[in-house]
Image (cartoon, rainbow, N blue to C red; front, side, top):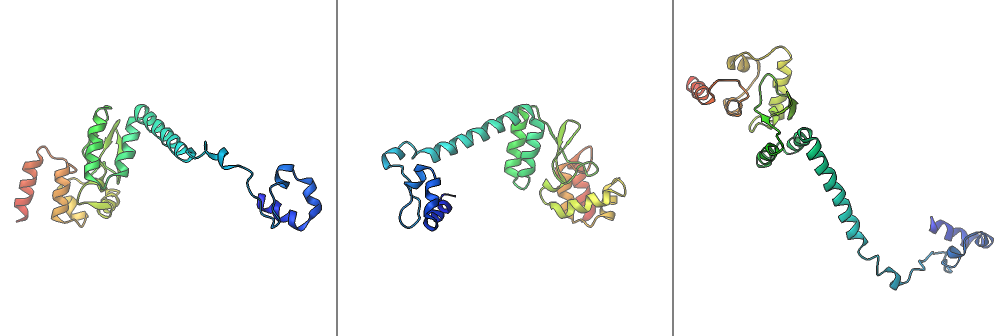
Length: 193
């Protein structure tokens, strides 16, 4: 805005009388406004950039701590959803959540949704976060589930185009309800070969 004032001063000499003295004194012959601040006056300003950034980070840290303390279930659900593709980070947040009494339960082929979700005051593992599944298969499972629950592993393989490796991933993650995952996995693999 000050450069517009300076250009108007250059065009209309009479308009300069209407401007405040500080602006009139800071316009040179080319209509450019220059700052009257001397170098000595700016010495105290040189650290403002760093201070403003540290203030912003302090505000962000305070807000994060507030959410983590007062809304731990929602906070950890959001963290897990942001890092669902990184197994190491997911494990870290699950362990961190235990110190805030946040329990993450295993996925379920008939109850889980695409991402981590809140179910029965716990966080349920999302289908797309299971290693080896991905969002495409998770979408297919969710679409097919609209027509009814999956009642068995055979029912799942009939209704959804799924590979053996993906079935193994679902079994290992606990998404297919069984009493003993290890025995079920061995039985499934023996039936396939």
